[in-house]
Length: 261
Image (cartoon, rainbow, N blue to C red; front, side, top):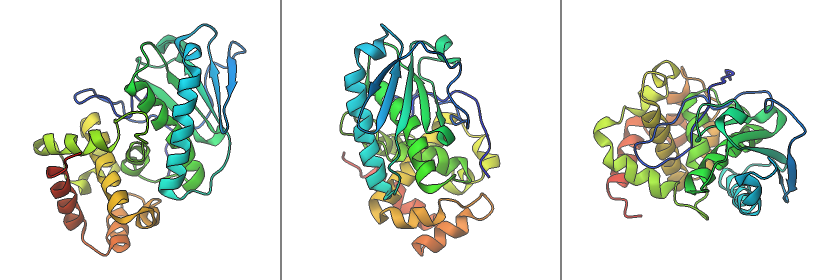
């Protein structure tokens, strides 16, 4: 069951060593609502930016990146979703009622997302924005996942690298470099255990494993276990791939150990 969570979520994939705050989804809309926004209409994403802000100065660039992410997410997961989404770029954490310069929230039920956008615009800005937009796209395309592992991991696993390298080019080397710190995948699939693992470890481990599954097997097996809850997901994964979870995990780690980018 989807649990409403209201803590701010930091960038989906920051540089190694930066943590992410768990629980970046809520179910309502950006707060506070006001008329102090300038709209920018893209093909499928409507951006709202504060007048004179860094986001307004870079809105064309942000729009290109998010439209690419929209196409990439729909294609990589074979989604049938074709709705219009809204992105709110806040000019500071205080403006957004969030916790840091690398924070965002997704509002799937209202097809909207918000994120803090401060200068300079970097790859981390793009990946934060894309991670939050992915929550909207994935949940509207597949429904709500029943585990933190899939909900948060998948939003980062499908990051497009057309305009940055904070997706697989970050995840797979990160996995290799942090082997000694990685919990077992089975532990992270348990929502009760997920919250006991350091946040950056939980996010990046789940994203790396899911990105590898997508690359190795395509989206259909992943879609088969996507809605499973903690008490059934291991069995659903093993049924979808016809292999024990430990064997899949070993293959993933072996791949990351030898990943050359």
